[in-house]
Length: 319
Length: 57
Image 1 (cartoon, rainbow over the protein chains, first blue to last red):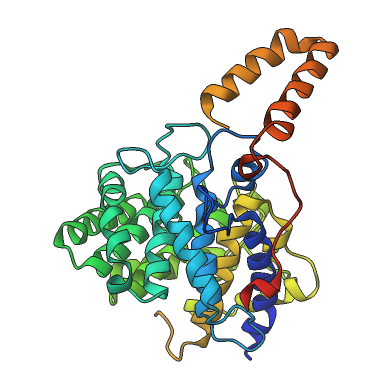
Image 2 (cartoon, rainbow over the protein chains, first blue to last red):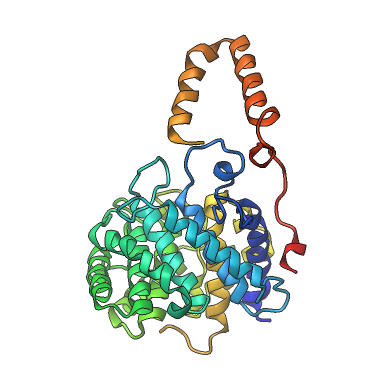
């Protein structure tokens, strides 16, 4: 096992076990696949938060990551639960394909973009388009909504929408979505600043910068050679690397949104030496890890740990 | 829980629900309705079951 896997796998797997507990795993239940325990179990809220459905990707990565000590690897129940999560996600959408996070009938660009990106990655990890033809067909309205809407104030959400559209285009081979992804790519490149910052509400935030870069690293893997995206990643990573202290914590002066976490997968994809700072910070118990976060945030952060492990295991780097 | 039910509950909470006695009355009514008189297959029972690794076998 590599040093990256040795340090990141445990926190990721522990989060999977936690999130399974948040998920309705009873296939006979009307809310089977719902990951918002406050909704389906405690019944103290009136609609489920769509971002929690990104658990479907966490389960897919747990199922498909071949690493020593992974008890979820190739366990059929994980496959069944991940599909259940995504079927619930399809069911809980608004009529126009968008999703809600905070109130009923909200059309959240953030929740739609990130959950759609997690959906396409899950499909790719669990057999690809032939095994998910029905779900992909039903997801088209979500991708249409993403293509028609944007949030140019927030870099990480725009990068996630590009991730979703590029992944969907790759899975379906539909030129309509390839064109939508190409248009969103232009948007993302246009909003990036000269120094590689992907702005968050007009400023820089290194934690969300790491989220944006993680999405773009996935876009690069999905789409292959893309010099402009690779160049943006290089510049963006240089900023991130310079802003991390010896424990892998982001400089608070460069974190306009007060973010404490740093996603590691883009650093792993580019074989950045700064990844060692994060591993060291984890070893010394000095930085935030997925289990310390709330239900909503722990899920995508743990999935990014899995992506970092996978990137680290690749012979090439994304450069 | 649905949005309409939640709105109805909140309306009660900020009006009659200001009274502790009314709160107790509502709680008792909900226990009778949702637990004691509900058919067994729809009976609400909050539990603390989470994930058990044996489910993977």
